[in-house]
Amino acid sequence: MKPPPYHWWRTVFYLIPVIAAATIVLGVVSLVAGLFDRTGRAPHRCARWWSRWILWTTGVRVTVSGAPLPPARTSAIYVANHASFYDIPILFSTVPAELRIMAKATLGRVPFIGWHLQRSGHVLVDRARPGASIFKKMQKLASQESSAIVFAEGSRTRDGRVGRFKGGIFLLAIETGLPIVPISISGTRAIMPKNRLMTCPGDVRVVVHDPIATSGMNRDAARELADRVREIVASGVSPVEAPAS
Image 1 (spheres, rainbow, N blue to C red):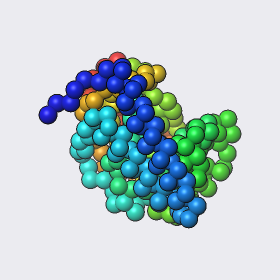
Image 2: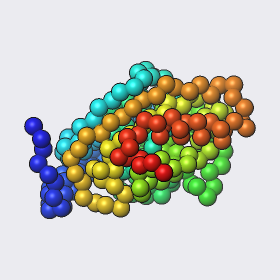
Image 3: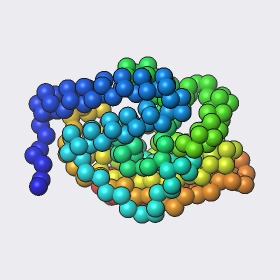
Image 4: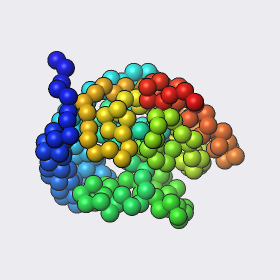
């Protein structure tokens, strides 16, 4: 059955209050759980429930294709394109791994969501002073059998094109020896593009690509690896999401 179209009034008077309530309730549960679970696994379950609630509430349907996802306890760096806020709940709801977001440090100041990120092992990066602490955080993720989500473009696309991937995360991948799992996401920009509050129901397609081993790679190969992964991710994004240059 096709869901009804979402108008601005539906977003303002229904979706925002419902999502805000879910964020507050699950945010509090996550914070309390984090007091007793320093591994971040219990807060991660709250994040998955939150993600599925958002997708169900807004009428977003997800299909996953491509290579099999790595086992849940396999540490990796998942690298995806970034077109919408919805990319985050999409990945949390579909990838079975213990996921931690690599994001800018300013997100840590956002009520509930930021508090959750700070207390559950997510990697918040001060872009002005990234430093060696990021390497230690990535090593800690691996020791806990957790994985990182990275949107290597650095910000959401405005026109649907997959931008140039920044090289830093790929240097980290080489230094830590963590494999990279490229993921292509199509459809989220139509649901909620950058700088728009209103959401619409829709279908999202996630394509999982074969993991890329980084163990034994030379540090000088980081830029080449970034370009290679960007090409793989872009190849799986639908033409609607990423129009030809």
